[in-house]
Image (spheres, one colour):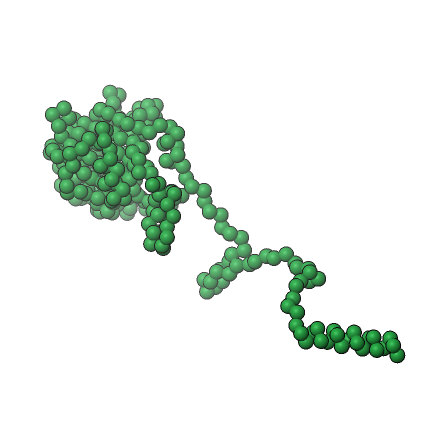
Length: 289
């Protein structure tokens, strides 16, 4: 059953369903990191990069799962819904693909995008990531003409941006807040190169952590489905006539049409009836006199 069709019966259930509704300003998306039955050293090191850099919003699962997301994504959908992670990274090794990484994105409990990347080379040490402070807002840079012309690589750039993106901020102090720079380069032959850099004292330092990957398989959403996923909800208009006083209390003004007092129905009282009868009797006696 879709979450949009469900109705909460309690306050706790209402708060739970509010998490699944679209928001005008979305926060950082949680990432689920999983492994297959067999993983190579390159795959393990690639997954560890996201565990170290984005530790505050990653959910690492210690269990191993023997599954193939491109053939049957039911397990990934179940785990992502259980841990409330719309993004997932799945690493697995096989004879045909020794170092395979699957990146997926979920929307409304269905797979929106799936990418399969084969790691060609991995150079550098993970110890260099310890130089970057935790809970930092990263900068994502995509370099390459194919990110602007090829629709498939445009979606690849968008998916990596979702992986790296932090919470939205109107103002950022460039010197104190920005220490992490993630650079994704697309070469002419389609090879993707991922680099991690450090920004410190107005200088960009390469951590010598370089990963070369190749896109081997993809399962992307259609344009209409992707457009619906990117649609923003309408902003609720502020109701008129609501103000706050100096104490922070909310005061509302209610506008009502002027009522015709002639048509106003009041409760009849016996005392008034007796007075009317006595007035009529007096009037009749006066006429007889």
